[in-house]
Amino acid sequence: MIRKPFGPTGVAVPVIGQGTWDIPESGSRRAESIRALRRGIELGMTHIDTAEMYGAGAAEEIVGEAVERVPRESLFITSKVLPENASYKGTIAACERTLKRLRTEYLDLYLLHWPGSHPIGETMRGLEELAAQGKTRYIGVSNFDVDELRDAQAQLRSAEIAANEIYYSPAERGPEARLIPYCREQRIAVIGYTPFGRGRVLRKGSRGEAALRSIAEKRGKTLRQVVLNFLTRDSDLFAIPKASNVAHIEENAGGAGWTLGEEDLAQIDAAFPMVEGPLASV
Ligand SMILES: NC(=O)c1ccc[n+]([C@@H]2O[C@H](COP(=O)([O-])OP(=O)(O)OC[C@H]3O[C@@H](n4cnc5c(N)ncnc54)[C@H](OP(=O)(O)O)[C@@H]3O)[C@@H](O)[C@H]2O)c1
Image (cartoon, rainbow, N blue to C red):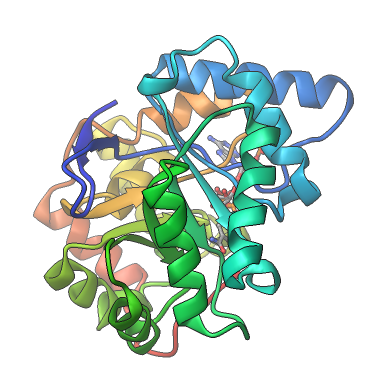
């Protein structure tokens, strides 16, 4: 898996990582998910995205189990604090619980999951304190539009926003209008979530699916590989598809390491036009 410099950090992060929302929490599907996460790591998808919200902590526990024999420094683990917990003290306490569930001493990236009611300055101080204590290497936000990012940045004293994790998919290209350019100018990495748009991208018989199919056939790739390649086409864009079995992981890993041509990009633009609007979430 190819890697790219991640925001202001100087760290090279795999362009395609692994999401963990809705990961099966019990039985044989849980075991298969763990095998899938490990296979992803073998393939270089070492950026693992989780959150205290996912399965009320169960996803973090599964990640902890999946990575227990993997050298910690080879991983890039992201987790997120729920807005309701994101007071100064609450942010620190939530991170400590997350570290226990993940069985690790530190996170690589800790994000505020979405803007909430605690004053953003308090959350940023909590995140900065965690970074100062070495409990997270980098800090950031998720689901933040430009104005919210500016407010968060204005509160920071000792750290920078390294990343903004947002809904970004061929079916949701709104962030290309203002948010992605702002992040680019500020050297904030953009982590795109829900690349397959919960059924909106690969809908059978749709114009979008037909366009992806023709590109995939021409390139000898799958439709999902075309989607992931498209979403990571620029130097500051990262994707975190979630997959719960080895075959899906292997397919997704093939989304990087090759380049779509101008004609392919024009076909995608025509089939999935960019519509500017407020930042969407799933
Ligand atoms: N920050 C936020 O607010 C936020 C919000 C949403 C998501 N996220 C993060 O982003 C990650 C990805 O988003 P998502 O889970 O919403 O959606 P997604 O990655 O677009 O789609 C996941 C779905 O696609 C299926 N899938 C994946 N690869 C496949 C393949 N190669 N072939 C067939 N099916 C495949 C998965 O099935 P299987 O599971 O059966 O493989 C699953 O049903 C999440 O897991 C989470 O970590 C963050």
